[in-house]
Length: 98
Image (tube, one colour):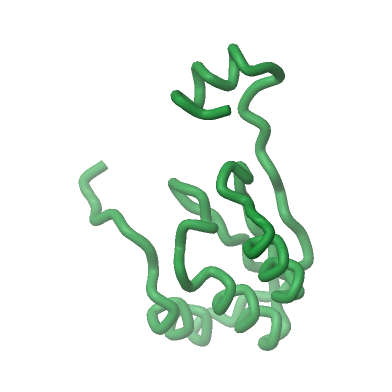
């Protein structure tokens, strides 16, 4: 891919969100959405504005704080991808993962 990589800022997210006003918002990307430092602000903002909010994650970096912030955000749905049915398969897909 020849485009810039990185995370959308909260300010840019708000600017785009307010122009579109989506009734349904799926927070996803080329990496885990939890890596974006502003993800919880985005979830809360979209919920306050009335969107049905869903996010996709592989849950590999889930911890107690992220779980609590996700619940507190009020999002409607979370989709968790499972990258392997056992460690051998998972290790081929997520090199170094457990």
